Image (cartoon, rainbow, N blue to C red; front, side, top):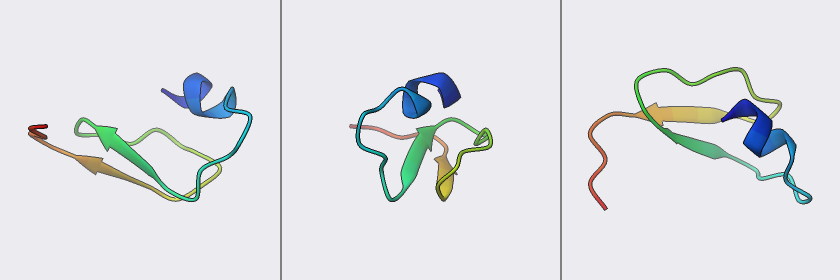
Length: 37
């Protein structure tokens, strides 16, 4: 996940992670459990 975000050409303002842990990002992030889309 960290490599995918780092490879983006435009950096996001915030990262939502589907999981229980949010790896260290250069931008603010939040891990969310049990996401149903």
